[in-house]
Length: 213
Image (cartoon, rainbow, N blue to C red):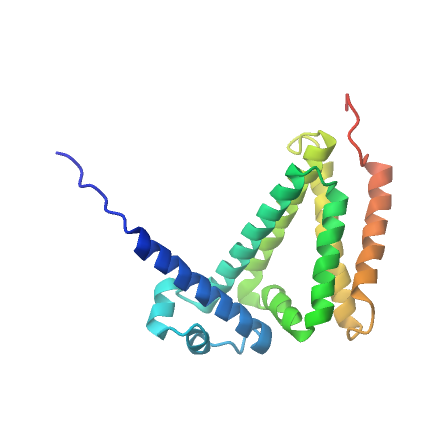
């Protein structure tokens, strides 16, 4: 007996995707302005201009919504990494540009960017989300470094170690900036950490590919 043919509805799927994107964007805005804890699902539905039952059709909980935002951010970061790798941009140049761009955004947008970042890192229920996002960054940077240096990251773990250092360094600079009451220069702090990372890498891992390694 022939299996029934599956009927696709591209317009319906596209409309669903647009609604989901609108929800994520509304939630992100409220996480920025109100903080994760105070942004209720009802407020998110109102900001997205949808009924709350529609919101729950797409996301069963606020945690699921925050996780989706993190996944979207990860997907965008993955695309940016792929583009720069294809263009032959050196990995440390890429990372420095990314960190400095984010640092400027934190300094420019103040509490907004901080609320969003702290929502992922500071809420207990979002720890798995935060860990997954950080893990993705490390994995992508590991592959980037390994490709530039011509090493196998599954055999030579130095690429993974360096990637973890870079991701952690950016986080350390942000935490130090917050603890200082945002009195310091976040961009300059990131630059100092990156310079220190470069010095370590220059001694322990070549920054340019050498044939035969």
